[in-house]
Length: 248
Ligand SMILES: Cc1cc2nc3c(=O)[nH]c(=O)nc-3n(C[C@H](O)[C@H](O)[C@H](O)COP(=O)(O)O)c2cc1C
Image (cartoon, rainbow, N blue to C red):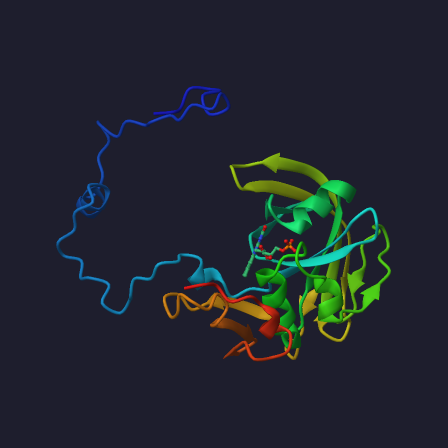
């Protein structure tokens, strides 16, 4: 049965009736949610956070700059590239963040792809707010002049992307969906060839935090990865000691 023309466009969900159609036995059992012949997923364990298996990717260090020149960094993982022409990114941004305030002010930002030695900076940028600390200064990052925006690129990163904001869409009580149009993408020649990471490249890959290990230390178990290995953040390092501990 075909959905009526225009039904989806009008925001209605069409339910297709399956009566009258014939399916093989195994498909019917699958559709009815019964299959006694299937064994249980014994080689799997159930975990609380569905993002973990898909977490192995380069986090974005978002750089923002206020009208008065204030610089800020925040760690972002709730983003996705979106569309090729024009090339754009969609990022969910918490309205309580300092970054959100600066995005509203200037409608520009940069995202930097951290090198693996920047794990501390990534954890710090995701744990402390620019409302309470000058994260840019504490991180000791080196600013480089961008081509199109007034926000600096990060010299230490493996890549930097310049964005102008096309839209900021309120999503729920907490987040705006920020659509950034790519103005320029800069990659370090020593780590990329034809736009692809080279084998010896050292991007930081973010694995997240172990869940359920300790309730008292918000950032005790941040894990990172390089290409082919994983390690834990050193929470005794000078930068990460600055992260306030959560009260039990
Ligand atoms: C792994 C990770 C990913 C995060 N991704 C996002 C994100 O995509 N959007 C967001 O608003 N906050 C994200 N956060 C939280 C912010 O980084 C955090 O609230 C930060 O302190 C905000 O900094 P700011 O107030 O200086 O902008 C993330 C945190 C972590 C640890």
